[in-house]
Image 1 (cartoon, rainbow, N blue to C red):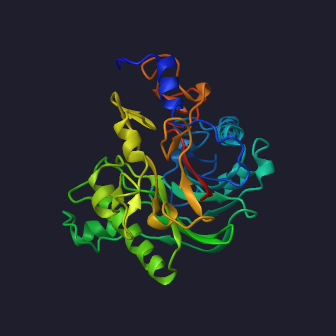
Image 2 (cartoon, helix red, strand yellow; image 1 turned 90 degrees about the horizontal axis):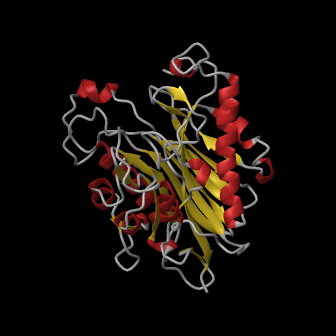
Length: 359
C-alpha cells in the first residue's frame, strides 16, 4: 500500500496552479503534448504485440472500452480548449497504435469542431505504440514531415553488441515543419526509450542527441526558424539526457543559439509533476523551445508565461483526471488499475505552452 502524504484536494490546488487560464487572447497559440497511455483499437495489427488490447486479450479490450477511452481523451482536449479559450494549434501525442485510432479520435463529437488533421508514421516499436501530432490546418500550414529513426552512431559508449544494436527497437521521432502565422516552425515529438531494461549507455540521451542534430541542421538551413521539442522523455527536465545532450537550459538568459529553453526545469524544482512513480512526482512530459522562440523581435511569436506563478509551462489537471481513492489516490487516473478497468484517462497529465505576439 502506497502512503499518500498529500491530500487529494491539496494536490489538485498544487498541480492546478501550473495551468491557470489564458484570458481569451484569441491570437494566442497553444502547443501541447499528451501521453494518452495505450490508445489501441480492438483489432490485431500484424507484427505488433497488441494482444493484451484485443477482446480476448488480457484486458478484455472491447469496443465499449475503446469508445470510452476515446471519449475520455477527447474530453481532456476539449477541456483544455475551454480553459485556454482556443483549440491547440499543435498537440503532440504518445502511445497511439495507428492511423485508425487517430481518425476515431479527431472525429469524436467532443473535439470534432476543432477540425484537427494528424501526422503519424508507423514505427518499429514492438508494442506498436508511436508518436503522432494533431494540428489545425487553419493555424499550422504543413510543409514537410518525416520520421527520424533511432541509431547508435553516437559519442555515447553503449554496452550493446552489434547484434543487440541491430535488434533494438524503439519509437521514432516525428518532425513536422510548417508555418504558424507566417513564421516557420519545426515541431519534434518524441517518446524516448524506457528506463526499464536499459543496458548501459544513455539511450534517452542518444534520442535527444538525434533531435538536437536534426534541429541544428534546420536552424542552419532556415535562419530564424522556431523550434519546439516535446515528448515523454522518460527523464526529468534537469536530467543528463536533457541538459547535456539536448542542451536544455532553465532560464531564457542561459539559452544560447544552440540551446533549448526548458520551462519545466523550474516547475519540477517547485515540486510539480505530470506522473508519479513510487511516491515520487516526475515531469517526463516536457516541452522545450529554441532561442528564436524565447528571444525574438517585437511582433513575433514568443513563448509567454501564463498564470500568477510566472511559469512558462503548464500542466493541465481537472478533478476527474485524478484518482480519488485506493493506493493510487492523488495520482493520474489511468485506464486500468491492478489489471481492473477503471475507465480513466491516462497515467500522465498533459502539458502545454502559450505562444503570443511579443509586445
